[in-house]
Image (cartoon, rainbow, N blue to C red; front, side, top):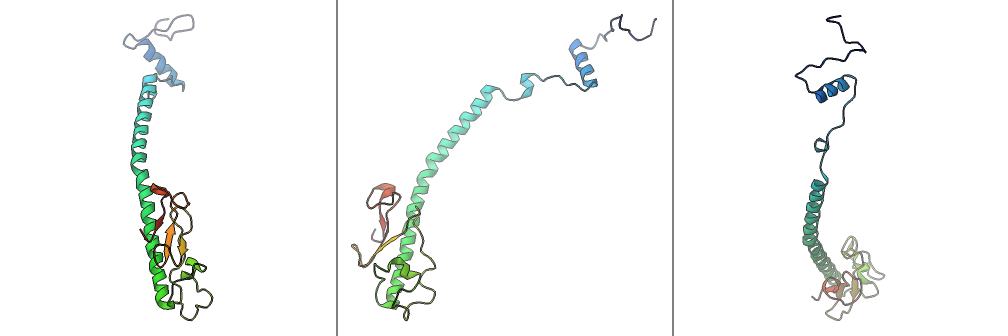
Length: 174
């Protein structure tokens, strides 16, 4: 019958202006199916990902090489500032009590009054709390000191006496 729809025994006629693969995509989309995308349309290639990873690695290396030495220097400077603060507090203690804290009382005498010093001791102490050195260790105190009236010092990054570089001792005599 002319003008009727194609039946299963007759092939469908295609529109000559539509490519065969476009027609298949259109039909699939009508039924809720989406054809898989080509790899080029899907995302990044392995080479592109590798280039990005190499660039990130180079940037990380540059940052680490430039930042880590700065952190070590900052820790040494913080230790020097803490020691100067402790030395100043010990000097104020000496002015009020006519002597530096004993080695036995140590730096704790700057926070709370040692036995026998309550009468001349400044209310609230000379510092609020004892700081730790930048490496998490306590500062050391000696009175009389080897280098002056009192020695206030940190053993540095390694936490042991002596050393060089970041491991060098940092004291109020340097």
